[in-house]
Length: 462
Image (cartoon, rainbow, N blue to C red; front, side, top):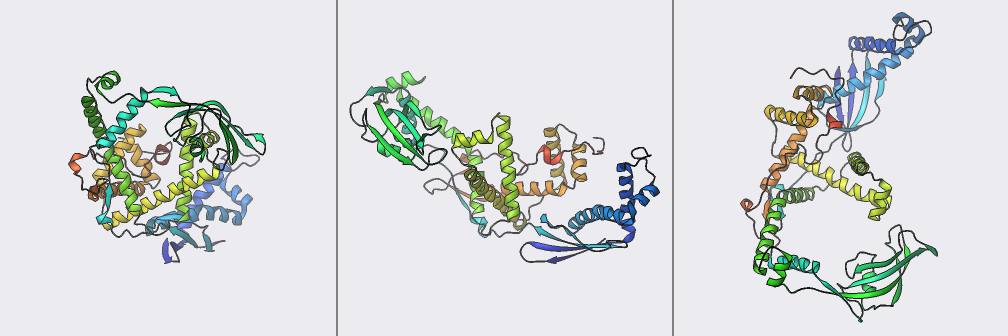
């Protein structure tokens, strides 16, 4: 086989492949053996049709067409591997010679993964919440505890933000009652934004017995007309934040002890979350350096994968996509737009991390690959030899190596970004728990369906 490449516009490359006649004969023999197994002719048992009978029945033209169907995909895959092209999409090959006999030549236009530039990655700055909460944050936590012990008193005045109101809500579309937009005796806290846009502003100063109407463009299921009646207004009376409250609401005798405990627990949570938050924000900062739009095929594939993952999770929870849309108040188009935005970000992150691999010459050695295969084997409940055999048989070892390089690139990135708090003050890494999560690929970790469809593998003994 001889292979030549020709760069085209954009991210496309033209592959020209020539296959000698001797190589084709080997494939032709394999094709005829396959056809013999598949053939069903009167007077012969399945799989027992003599080759000469099959050749006579099919004729040279049909046999050649079958050979081409087998030859072209096989040698195209070999050409891609030989040229080390990172192909993300391919057009149907065009056979240019050998349609009837002799050597075969074909052209194939493939789209390759683009290489992006990430100027400035060495000086990225990531903002994390300070591990020590402020007094205001502790005050807010104490207030939430006080609200759990609040007393509710009826008031004659109009509603204010923070009051609890009891409402009758009736929604309609085109004069007909709108399903899911009607509720009697709904208890609602003014100012929480839990109904539709505009309701909170209209509730201010409304007292028991008052009624108002509005057209809600953002109502679940589409625009609707709402009629709302206020039946009751109650204010929340919070207990004082003193020693008596601390004793009633916790195991501490004083408010000082309670606040110290809250501070300790909030700091611990922030330190535990620091690793994942830093990872997420480091990727976000890296994505900002990617100026080019990602290829549509990558975005489309990632979008489909995200949708499939969502459907799989919903199925596991015995729910449907329709139920999910109803619960979130989204239309199918809104969900698709949201998922596409996420897909674009993930594709950009992957391209940026690949660029970082090249820029920092990040690689993995064989011992690291061996360790990763052991991890995959444990997860899939297979032997390492079987996992390796499947990866090699399916040509996925290079993909595993690439994923591991990408994971190491993310580790490099996290270790080299500058960390500041919300006030822009440098933070001490030693004060944070920056532990890795052990994931092979930070964006698309290998899964069983991707790696170990191994029923027909012939692995070595472990």
